Every structure is written in C-alpha cells, then in structure tokens.
Image (tube, rainbow, N blue to C red):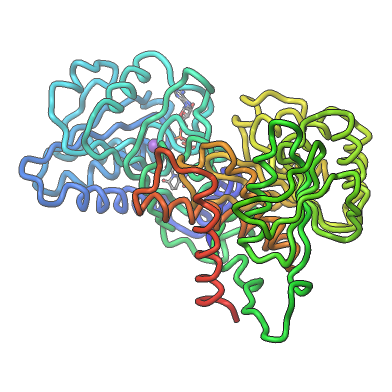
Length: 503
Ligand SMILES: NC(=O)C1=CN([C@@H]2O[C@H](COP(=O)(O)OP(=O)(O)OC[C@H]3O[C@@H](n4cnc5c(N)ncnc54)[C@H](O)[C@@H]3O)[C@@H](O)[C@H]2O)[C@@H](O)CC1
Ligand SMILES: [K+]
C-alpha cells in the first residue's frame, strides 16, 4: 500500500523518531542519502560542478550535510546559502559548520550573475521543505527563475521548493514560483502534494528515503496512492451459467438537444465495460438507435422507469426544467447512481436536489466533478478548489454523503469518512471533450455488475488513466486522442486485469 502522509503526520513521525535517536542523526542520514543520489545522477560526467541551494531551515541543513558528504569526492561543490546563522535550527547550524570545514565553495544566492558564471552538472535544491509558509520572493525568486532555465538535472530535497506538500499547489498561488525538479528525494514518506495539481510537474521522478525510521514511529495514514491492489478483490472471472441479466442494467440519463453525443459515449463505455443492458434516457428527442452500437437502447426519459437500475445521470443533460425533473426522479430511485456534468450543476444550484442527494446516503452515490463543477458545488472559485484539491474532495464527499471523484491532474477520490486516494495514471491526452462521459459510464458499468462502490470508483479512475497512458505509448496521443478511442482500450485493459489478477 502506498501511503501518503500530510505535513502534520510527517512532523509527528519525525518527532517520535528523534526522541529515540542522538541529535543530528536524521539530518546526517538525509544529507547522505541525498548525496548518494546526487552522485548517481552525475555518474559518467567529466568535470562535475554541483550547485547546492541551501535555505534557512532544516531543508537547508540537509543540503549542507549533502555538500559536506559530496566534498569528499572528486567533484566541485558550490553552496548558495540563504540563511541567517543566528536563526538557523541547531541541526542546520551544525551542518553549516561541517560544510564550512569542507572543500566547498560558498556563493552568493542573491546574485544570479554569480550563479550563472558556471556551467552546472547538477543542481540540488535545499531552499525549503515542508516548513515553507510564504511565497518565494525577491532575490530568491530570481534564483529559482534561473534554476528553472537550466537543462541539467535538478534534485529537490524532500519536496521542490515553492511547492505545498499537502496540496500540490505553488505556495502563494498564481504568479508565484517553485523549483521545477527533475528528481525529488522525499524523506520519511510520500506526500499528497507531489501527486496532484502541479505536484507531478514540479517533482519529476520521485524517490523515497525512509531515513531508517522504525515502523513503530509511523502513524496511520489517511491518504494513499491508487493502485490495482486496492480494487483487485472486485475482479471476478465470469461464471459460465450466466446471462445478460447477471451483469446489470445501466441507464444513462442526458442528451438534451445538441448534446446527444455525451450520453452515447457514456453508454458505449458502459456496454464495453460489461454491463448486461445499456439504455439511454434522452431528455429531448431520442434517436431511433446508435448506428455504430445498435445494442444500446434509446428511450425518452419520461417513459423510463428507473426502479433499481444503475443510473448515470448528467452527460449532456442540460439544465432545463425538464432535465431538472428527470434528475429529481433519478435521485429518488433506489438503485446506485453516478452523477456528472449538468446534473452536478443543477444540484449545486438547488438546495432541494442537494437534500435528495444527501438523503441517499444508504444507497451508493458517486459524484464526478471537474474543478469548475466542484467550485459550484462548494460555492467556491475554481482557484480555491485547485489550491487544495485533497481538502476540496474531502468536503464534497462529506457534505454530499457520496464518493467524490475530483477530476484533473492527480484525480482525488474522497470518501465520506475523510479518507482519500490520489490517482497516478493518466496524462494530458485526456484533456479533451467526452473523456468525462467515458469515466462516468465506466463507473456505472462496474456498479451495475455488483462491484462495491469504493472499488468501482478506484478501478474506473485507474483504468481510465491507464488506458490513456497505453494509447500514448502507442503514439495515439497525447495530441488528438479522442474519447471514443479510450473506450476499447479500457475494455482490453479490464479483460487483461481480470485474466491476470482475478481470484
Ligand atoms: N527536523 C528533522 O528531524 C528533519 C528535518 N528534515 C528536513 O527538514 C525540512 C523541514 O525543515 P524546517 O521545518 O526547518 O523547514 P524548511 O527548511 O522547509 O523551511 C523553514 C524555514 O524557512 C523560512 N521560510 C519559509 N518560507 C520562506 C520564504 N518564502 N522565504 C524565506 N524564508 C522562508 C521559515 O521562516 C523557516 O526559517 C524537511 O523538509 C526536511 O528536508 C530532514 O532532515 C529529516 C529530519
Ligand atoms: K527543497
């Protein structure tokens, strides 16, 4: 299980570990681990010049200890220090003394011209770690801007400076800066902010270093990374003696005039992911049939009895009075429900629909907002949602008593009890119309086949991203991938993981 720890949890673990160790032990281990990774990154280079940025706190201390360690090898180490010695924490001050006693050149961090006078083989970023509270400004900002122009590897210590380890947003928000690392060596445990929002873009390859902290010091995490093991218990081979009724009905509700393609995509996905029968309930005129997939059944929404079928409501639904009434009826139904797109917009706009959703707590509801829909649901701005995606997803799940899938880079899946899972599959090829409809159809298909809702949500998000990754590997995208192309790729993937992992 890939645990993710918040800053507060990392501090707790660190505190427990420090109590049982001589002072400076953890910093020495951190500095040495960083130096060893640095050596592996410059291996094979001729004249090696390593620039180490060291900030005012313990992240800077780690950097200075790494500088001391590296100075014992055949390479040139330069430290750009931004610290007031009188205010440094004890460990960091000790690390500074050790660096000063080593073969290390000290540069002026505030002088980009000075920094730019050398061609660097590697930059080590130890400006700030999990203790950064303010945006990077002034001379330090110029330094970060300079680092971000370099083409050499940039190794961030613990987390890229400027990034919030809890949220994955740049500290200070739009217009502020962070170091764009090619590698991050993260201490004690993995952190949510490296996997959502801008986290992945700024962290590069993530490597973990536990600092040999004893198991007993660790706390129970409330976040983890999505992986197959979290939902593989729901993968089942098909029994021989079954029929279409064994695999459930999905009713996709949507398709207002001019938006008929959205429910068709969701329905095609539901059929390709194995649901026994798939209907589309159109709020406006229903076409006679889908000429590509005539197995889908087209109905007028007014004439559809929802009873206990699995409902996917929202794709192309529109926000007309009629659409509102159909949504209201869908929320009253006793089956499991996936709520997307305009259905979420209408729920955001009307307390009556919100109460209906909250009152479904004993049934299963999965909501799949993108950040703008999430902003409407939480009466916030999109920037506020993106500022702290894990927290936004938690609020959605708790408030609407649903499983909330907050889409976007590093999709966050949150549960009403406060637990979250961050997805690691997927890529910008999915930033195209219709992929959200495909995701909602996939969730619906798994629910209809009897998957537990938690596993259905995790598997749908994971497969949706993984299939897109596989397509990009084949050259189908990232530019120009279409939602329709993701559907058969997901079918292949689902069959493959059932074959390889079902018990
Ligand atoms: N304490 C420990 O036992 C360990 C700490 N470790 C390292 O320590 C880091 C956390 O250290 P700290 O808590 O000292 O915090 P940081 O080193 O992340 O930075 C905090 C310092 O930066 C200043 N600061 C924050 N934002 C600033 C800004 N925008 N401009 C200028 N100054 C700013 C703060 O006033 C404070 O002095 C971890 O990320 C990790 O790298 C590791 O060595 C493992 C062990
Ligand atoms: K850092």
